[in-house]
Image (tube, rainbow, N blue to C red; front, side):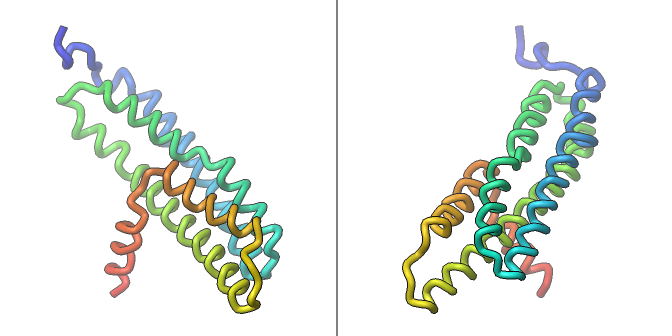
Length: 160
């Protein structure tokens, strides 16, 4: 049995893919946006304990990476002649997810760096909560498996 025979027409997987593109991933993105708003609020108000809690909660609740991986597993089952249509169907969602994730991680990283700078200015040692927040940033980079630095470079080039 050839590899192409194991694959199916897009229309057979379309309902499952539509579920990801219309419901699952947008829900994950909305959850990420709420964490981002809370992070911005706590950072602006310098409520460091709440900010740290928000970092932890964001790390626990962001399911975006697993949703995209599940969607990609479905995509691997689509026949070659449907790949163009499939790409047009899922690329906008993947691009939106990458951009939202990069923006969230940038904000998260900035808040950790700001807190780190404050501790350095005060001449105090890093608190365990700050160290954990820095660990969460690294964990999110790994879990989301995105080219964060590449995305940031592209955004900077668009601005200039």
